[in-house]
Image (tube, rainbow, N blue to C red; front, side):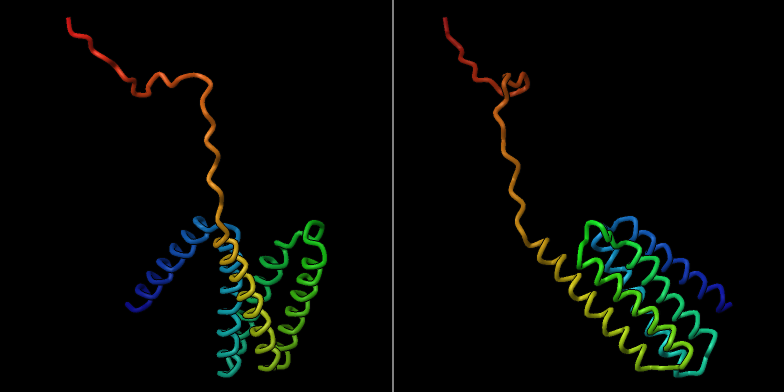
Length: 160
C-alpha cells in the first residue's frame, strides 16, 4: 500500500524534473547540475553517518557522475581558456576527494567538496543574474520600402 504511494510520488517528481530540464536554458541546466550534486552529497553524508555503506556509495557515485558527466563534460576547453582549464582541474580534484571520502568515511572531504560546489553554484547564479539584468536594446525599426497594403489609409469624401 505505501509502496504504491511512494512510487507515485517518485514518478511525479521525475516528471517535474524532466519538465524542468526540457524548459531550461543552458544556464539553468548548469544550476540544476550543481543542485543535484549538492543533494547527492547531502544524502551521502547522512548515509555515511548512519553507516549505510551501500546507500553512501550510491549517493557519492551519483555526485561524482554529475560532476564528471555533467559539469566537467560541459566545459569547452578550447574556447573556455584558462577558466575552463581551472574548472576542469577543480572538478577532477572534487571527484578524487569524493573517492577518498567514500573509501575512508571522511566527512571533512565531503564537506570540502560540498563547499566548493556551493561556491561555484553561487558564482554561476550571479553570472546568470547579472546577464539577465543587462538590458537588451530593442531592434531598430526599419521603414519599409513599399507601402503596407493592409495599413489604414486616410480617405476623404467629397459631397456633391
